[in-house]
Figure 1 (cartoon, rainbow, N blue to C red):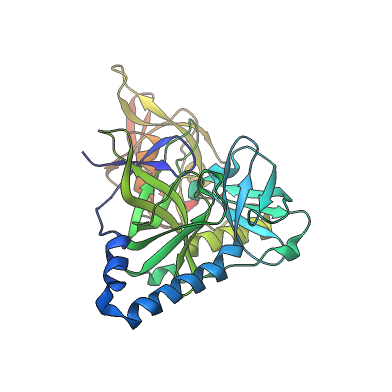
Figure 2: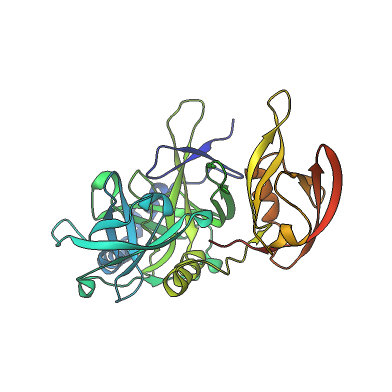
Length: 348
């Protein structure tokens, strides 16, 4: 049975479209540091130490009241990117750079749940924060050594090691009634240990650049515990793009992800099996509404692919871009019909 996923901080069990086993970074490090490698071992050790000393001051612990997580400093104005599930419903936070640093107060700037991202900003003491440098996540290569930095279990300044196990994963988190699921596109899979509290922290290359934001770990459904060596991070390109929109506009208007621009809920048949998505509301002038789809309609398929629940509908939409035209199968009063929809952009 394939492993399911859980958020690195939260206890919610979520699922993934693709997972695979990968060699552990420990084996790579042991090989590099074996007695026969001499200078290579010294060089690798120096690279680890240099990267950690440069990047760790850019990674903070975030106390959201009922929970804690991690964050990465965006700039010298005090903006910090983290996971939406780390901030939850909180509006005010306490930020700490290290165990010896002064606690800083922060406020919420905005969240974008579909990508599980949020931005907060310290209200004072921004000078104490060191902005991170970001990698081009599109160039991530399997086998690259990475370090996961954050505050797992509240242990600020913690670092684990691993490699990039795979790239281009599509990871679907749990769904909330009436809302689309968080779907991480082009997720970076890593063997670095991702523990509760690492969410929102940094997955870092030895160049000192942040490759992604750790957010999920796999969980073995048969034993109920974590599946070692399978973690996932939001790519840096997504994190920086969404963060800048939240900072500049207070919301996301150009996610790059297609949307019907509806609020939906999973519809079930007489035997209580899901068989579509009921439109609970359609944005006025939005993609679905412009095509004649209205409240009460049931979306049964998109482009010939069935959409039996909200998560499946969002996964199908991942294959399209805003502005594309697609045939949507709709049930109205039990009667099927097809309409052509010009897809909008997922926003929030």
